[in-house]
Amino acid sequence: RKEVEQDPGPFNVPEGATVAFNCTYSNSASQSFFWYRQDCRKEPKLLMSVYSSGNEDGRFTAQLNRASQYISLLIRDSKLSDSATYLCVVLSGYALNFGKGTSLLVTP
Amino acid sequence: SQTIHQWPATLVQPVGSPLSLECTVEGTSNPNLYWYRQAAGRGLQLLFYSVGIGQISSEVPQNLSASRPQDRQFILSSKKLLLSDSGFYLCAWRDGYNQPQHFGDGTRLSIL
Image 1 (tube, chains in turn brown, orange):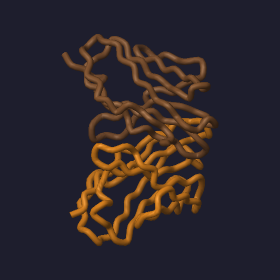
Image 2 (cartoon, rainbow over the protein chains, first blue to last red; image 1 turned 180 degrees about the vertical axis):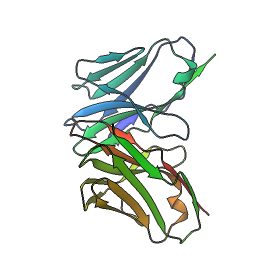
Image 3 (cartoon, rainbow over the protein chains, first blue to last red; image 1 turned 180 degrees about the horizontal axis):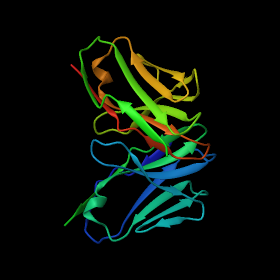
Image 4 (cartoon, each protein chain N blue to C red; image 1 turned 90 degrees about the horizontal axis):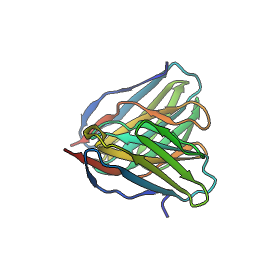
């Protein structure tokens, strides 16, 4: 079983839609969780950390369910500029384990 | 504030040639440093990480090596490149145990 698994998509949504991405991880001892965004041919950039109580940053909401080993990212009111690949990242020890990413395309 | 520099941005090398990619971090001390490779259309593959000077952990056995000669310098090397070494190489740093990683701009390596 892979450390971090994500639905690769692509998710094609119209502008203004709400879209949710899910991610599962295998190591129950994982300590920290993050969502990154990667644009085509660019480096990944930190979008937000994921806290146990859930957290929100503008149109983005992240949730963590430790019992089910599950992380989610919700994007409300999608913008064209949200089109990118979203990477779920789980910290276990010194290494961060990256999912392969979920591709999002927001269309006019 | 902390910054990470990675160079070159693009590199085209013949099969069998050597490789040296360099990464430096500014504005922090004793960071954890990482080298990743991303093949076209694929996820990130961790190659090496380092928690201190001279300390290198290898995640994937291959013809690449890494060195950390100074606290904020991380070098990825190869003596003889293979076609399969083509990809997008990313250096990253992390400052603190539960902190996220921050990436350099990456080096796009093409092997001919």
